[in-house]
Image 1 (cartoon, rainbow, N blue to C red):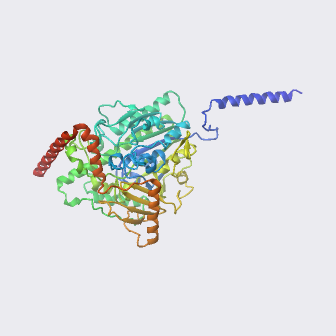
Image 2 (cartoon, rainbow, N blue to C red):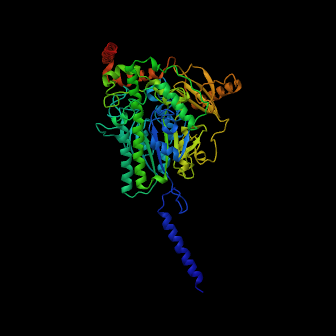
Image 3 (cartoon, helix red, strand yellow):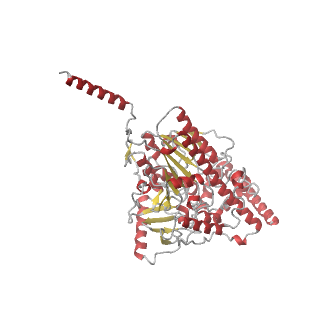
Length: 602
């Protein structure tokens, strides 16, 4: 007789209990049921200036066991593209929006002064884009960044205003790897460092890769100590292997004599290794770049010097991988590793600049003596010949739209349901990473509105279907994907790539390649496919118009722009017009004297 009342009371009690439980849930964030796996932690590892085959898992001889292990655990992307310089790539990595629409149409240091400040050419993230860190933070993730930022140093663009809970970052394009306040080129009066949105108090000395991992471990351990259980997003922006190439002696010693056969032999060796790994077609051909030197023509002394440059380059990559290993070891010890997704990529292809234009400044700031290379106060430069080996079997390098400048190694590992030791050959792009991370975190794409503000929509494609082996492509074969940086241009459509590159890498003319069959860009298809050749040029013009791409001024070169911007941003503010003339004169005399001494002793 009292049974209905008992049932009603039990129902009310159960409802109250459920309401109490959900009242403590994070607003706006879906709560995992016991049958639903927790949202994964996410670690993004960004290397600087690594060529396509610098990683062991991509055919290289450099020891990168921890990145290789991630590749074995996950998916290697062999047709993955970025911009040909750091800031544009990092802007797309953070926003999923083309760099011409997110404000960084070019690297500030290489931007013509006629472009600076115009729409799409702010040299900093525009306020109409939202970062993946903000979206993850708003959905309940802890968010951290250490290392290179390079997408804007204005207060509204620092990481604390762009979605990161904790941050220690370098605002500009790079610095010395032993002394954090030492400029690597005369771009500005000081290196910009910020911690949690304020000027950072940096140590007098450090080693960059070690410091960035130390600080990330500090953030993770601090939250572990307070018992926080939210998933985390950790972004590490390494300086390795940006110039000056520098590395601890113990790592350099591992590579003594490794490169005695020179860059051509290394380029061929890596091509064969990439074929053996199944990363490129067996019949892949290569061109020999016009900027590559003749190894046999070098004196024994010069061969030893060039070997040392590559030994340091390899050691720097090895040292970075070692630091990645320390992070992975911590995650294993803390129990977080099995629920962590890793993304590894390089921000652009290998550095092919010989830095001749910077020599007058370098000789007053650094030593380039062979016995000091790699250490504090010394400046190593890999140069165009070793860069040709780093990008093997591709052609071109940093700043150019040839594959060696924009096709880089990329790995995604740790995805639940993802296949191990998989190779994805589909055309993919750096703008694809943000939607991939958001899908992993069960965060919807923001569309064109966020927090009441109109924003640029994310244009990339999630890569999870590739990682899980559910599909072989994320783009329709007829879907164009455009690209431009510093006047070097490309348009992708299926397996075809239309590209135009300025000298010394290109001839300033359009060419058409099948980059799936011919990743080395050795066979121009424009006469075989005249209609496609013309149609893809029309597609490129549509891309330029839609993205506000500006034409380059007459006579523009990236090196010339860097020099001009250095005069305005460093030399004139530091020395004034009269002082500038005197400094240039004295430095030129010093450089001439050094060359004469070197010629006398050779």
